[in-house]
Length: 143
Image (cartoon, rainbow, N blue to C red; front, side, top):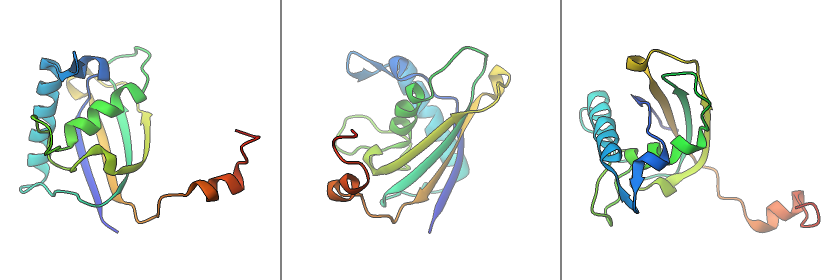
């Protein structure tokens, strides 16, 4: 099973990443910073084509209360390369739909210049669960 490990800058929130259904200036700057981080880590960035399980730890620049899920979408979009769209990300993933499982958490507060995000992507060989299997464990009356 293959694993990819990378450190990228602390992501902008999804609200700052997009503006009027387009990537904002802050979003483009963040995607470019991720592209630079990927190219520094991998001389030739691998184009991950398999499904992955993603784990990330955010190290925020201050003590403000933050919701990690508000940062994950902009992180995945910045690491992805979507050929059917007019913009490109870092090119590590073809599309963020390859992420079958995602787990994130907030790390300790660090100085603003050191704020970052540690991302680990692992090849996910597990099959997608079926509805029939899920209903065996969670009957609809419980849901």
